[in-house]
Image 1 (cartoon, helix red, strand yellow):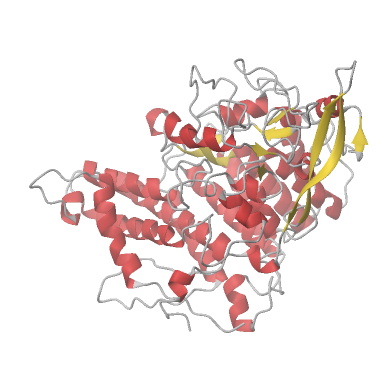
Image 2: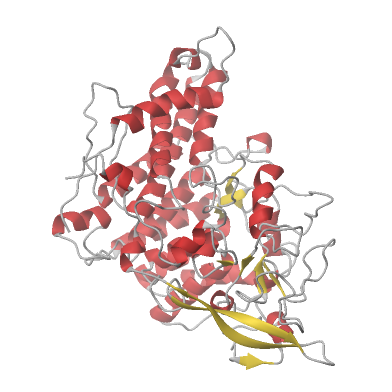
Length: 570
C-alpha cells in the first residue's frame, strides 16, 4: 500500500464556525451575532457549548434520514448491520453493509466531515472561554474540561472508524498551514488519553436533576477505559495489520507491534471507572429481580446505572422515526421492523448455564425461548411474548396460507428487536422518553474482565467482574476456565449484556472476527415457525434467509472520495 498522508481541507474547517454561530442562537433582525458577542457573557458561551454537545454526543436511535443527521445508520440501527439484526426491507443503509455494497463514495453509517466540525467548535470554545467576564475561574475550568472531553470523544469516533487521522488541536485560520498530515494511530490514542487526563480533575463526580447529561468525571473515565480497551485489541495491538501494508502505512492503522502491557493499561482504566462509581452515585440495577433488572437499566431514563446518555431528543424526536424503522407492519403501522437472526439468539445461554442447543428442526419453539437467559425476553420480542399492554402477545408464525403472521417473518423469523421500545410505550399513551446510553456501568465490569484476562489470565478479579453482571440477571456463576475459554465466555457475556447498544458491531471488528462464518459473513439463519395442531407449541425449522458479504478491508472505513479527490493525499 502506498504511503498516505491525509490533509484537512480549508473549506471543511473554516465553514464550521460560521454554521455553528447560526446553529445555536437565532439572529434577531438588525442584530449581528459575532464570535465576540457569543463570548461576551456566560449564558451565550454556555449555549455555544451545548451546541458542541449536540454535535458530539452519539445516539444510536435514528432521528433523521441521513448519516449526518441521525443516529444509528441511515433508516435503521447499527444492530441491523451485524449479526444482531436484520431489516426486512431492502433499501435501508444497513443492508448495503450486509451486501458489501458500500464504499468510499457511499457510507450510510458515517459522515466524516461532521466530526471535524464538532472538533473545531470545541477548539474555539476552549480558546475563548477564559475571556468570558461573568464566570468564576473554577466554572470556566469545568466548561473547558467538558469541551475537551467532547473533542476527545469525537477523535475516538474517528479513530475507531478510520485509524489514524489528522490531529487538530486549535482553531485553524487562513494564515495556518491547512495541509495537515494524517497522524499515526498511536499518536491519536495518546492525544485522546491526554485530553481525558487533562479534563478529569476539573469535572464534578456527578450531575443531578436537569444537569444530567452534562459531562462528569465518570464520563471521562468511561471514555478512557473504552479507548484503551479498543487500542489493546487484536485489530490494533498486533504486528500484522488487517490488510497488507508497508511499515510506514501500518502505523496509521494500528501500533504495528504487540504489547501485552496495553491490556493492563486498559484493565487499570476500567478499574478506575469502577472505583469512581460510588462517588458518582452509580451502581448496577439489582432491586427489581432477575426478570426486570436488565430492562429497567435500559428503559428508565437517568437510572443509577447510566454514566452518560444522549438527552438531546424528546420522545417524538426519537420515536417518529424509531417507531417507523423498528416496528413490524402489524404493530402500530411500522414500516418493516428489525428481526434478530438465530445466529445471535444462539449466544443466549440457558437459564441454568451453558449453551442452548438448537437442532435443525423441533416441536418445542416456545419452550426453547422460555429456557433462555432472562435478558433475552427483556430485549427481544418472540412468538407468543407480550409486546405491551395494548398489543398483547405477538404471533410470529407461518399461517396456513403460507404467509407470515408478522411482516418479515420469513427472514429473522420468530424474534424481533424490542429493546428501546419500553412496554409502557403505547400508541395511545406515548408513555416514555428514551435517552441513548453512551456509557452504562455494566460495560466497565466487562471491560475490566476482558482486559485483565488478557493481561494476567483468569484471576479472581476476572471471575468476580463477569459474575457480578451475570448474577443480577439470575445467571449462574462461571468458573474453572482457561484463559482462552474465559476469553470466549467474556465475549459472549458482553454480546448479550450490551446487545443492540452499538457494541457488537465494533467489538467483532476490534476482535478481528467479523469475517468468521455467521458473524458478518456467510449464512444468516432464521426460524420458520408453524403451529402444531392440538398443541400450544410450535414447530420450527432453521432456514437461511441471507448470505452476507465480508472483506477484511472493511475492518476500517475508507476515507471518503470527496476528500481524496481534493488531491491532498500523496
